[in-house]
Image (cartoon, rainbow, N blue to C red):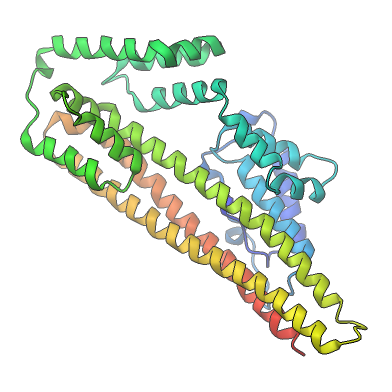
Length: 377
């Protein structure tokens, strides 16, 4: 959302390559639906496909602008909310070029405005319908799945009605059908209930924990445990993935805005050395400016290494869940097999993206340190 890197690309890549990529994407864009790829799959780190320079080239303001454009392109291709994707495409097409992109990334700018629009009721309702249709399968929740699909094909009012009452009504119809089915009239075992309790207490996903806690709430029944395996688990996992991607986009947007500012300040400080009345002071100022760029890049790299570890843990967790579901003969577990396999693959891609982005920030750090040493004279 994996990807782009939504996570940015190494500044060492030549600017004309980045620009060519952006132009190619825009030219072939067509409809938004035809260009949008999964956030976990659409972000293509440029450092993977472009050979980096053999020597460290000085960081420039143009580098920062190219990095910003590549990053916004990755957002446009992601699985973030449609409001953000459309806004990103629009700013990439803006005739004001890099200036418009810089403003879009600025706090309170286009990115923040697009994010604010995702909180509007209409957007939230549609997102809810999409997630329900994706996580409530025809096999376990046919009434809910059909109702969600119908709402998505309908109007904003249809989607609001589904959120308000339609979802709960369809859930009840599905539960009544399952209760009337002799195959579903079974007791949840103590070990299955203990497993859900473990998810409620220590699952790596916050929303999965919430879903498990709901299944175990006071007054809950075996049907609630069954529904956790049927769709509650997958729904919580989808929310956790969405939250992760949104958090990554928020953090990286702020980092790119700051990077552009710091590089601009450092370049100006270095330029000021020429003809300065106090050359020693001017060099010290430039050194500190480049040091700030390096510190920013170092912090970004460390943050992405932490995210890499978190994504690795999630991928391993879902790998184990998929394996357990495949090995058991219990029909209750079979409902989570497909979602678990998909989640394992998605988190593995998130892990790879985080690792690639950490490397790109390390490249920026190294080049900033080179600039810092250069201005020492």
